[in-house]
Image (cartoon, rainbow, N blue to C red; front, side, top):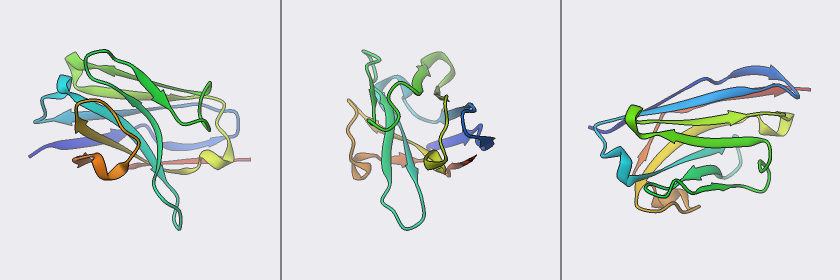
Length: 123
């Protein structure tokens, strides 16, 4: 059974940084798009960043461009999200997700999801 496990969340003040990790198991990792989504209660799940298999092309939501950096290490089956200059509006549960092939922004396209890691940013 495929598992995605996130870590690295926490509470920081505005302007701070966190580095999130997502490690996959039982997955042909190098063939999968890996993505980060986030969700706040009462709102729809939002795509944050993703990284394509093969090319390693990255994609970002406009709200995080220039502040967040997504990367992947295929040898470790792990994806990272470096979050800098955090804002209170970045507060959310962050989920990693995987789908075969190139990345999309639609959560329904993703086959596998982690349990999430909470990021809380105080002003």
